[in-house]
Structure formats: structure tokens, C-alpha cells
Amino acid sequence: MCDRIHATVAELRAKGIRIGGEPLDEGWGIAVMMTLPGGVQVMLYEPRHPPAISVATSGVPSET
Image 1 (cartoon, rainbow, N blue to C red):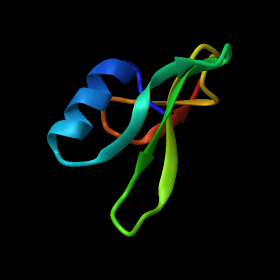
Image 2: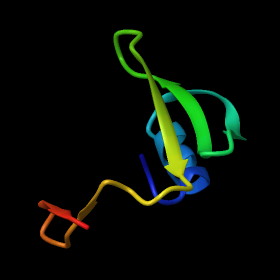
Image 3: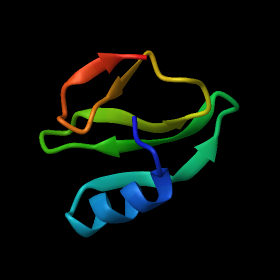
């Protein structure tokens, strides 16, 4: 999950992560598949729903 998927995809591609196509609007969010080293596929998405938790500036998850 990320806040700005298009910027995140650009950053990941610059680091050599394979991204399958362009982010697509799925209704609940904008999603794209990425392939990690070892061939593991993971969905990256920018949600359109409130997240279950938020990350405080300290990096520790906190309840919203």
C-alpha cells in the first residue's frame, strides 16, 4: 500500500523492480503488480478507503 502510486512506481522502476504494466483503477483503489527478486509477485496499491492503521512519524503503527 502506498500514498502516491504513480510516484512510487517510478521510484521502484528506477531501482530495477519490475512493474507489470501501468496502475489501473480498480474502484477500491489504484493497483499494479510488481515482481520482486526471486519471481514473487506482489500487488501494490493506493487505497480509496481509509486504512485500518496509520503510521506515525516515528514509524510505529498506530490505531486510527
